[in-house]
Image (tube, rainbow, N blue to C red):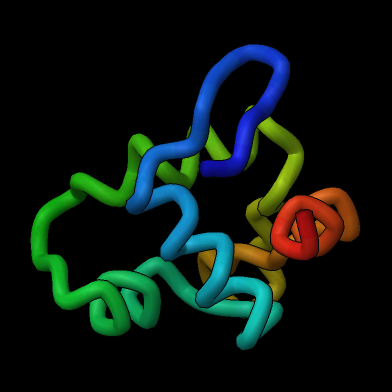
Length: 77
């Protein structure tokens, strides 16, 4: 399980980070479809990953999320 100084990533956090590592840029809808969820339960994981510095929100094409270099390094650990 990946660890961060202020917490431990959940399995959902890890799944999102792995998806982001493969796709680099995804909308929230694409994430929900990939994880087969229809509620907002992934919002907590996305927020936690943003706090860790692993993903960042961008608004150039609507609300999208990108994986950061720090997130890519965390995947390789």
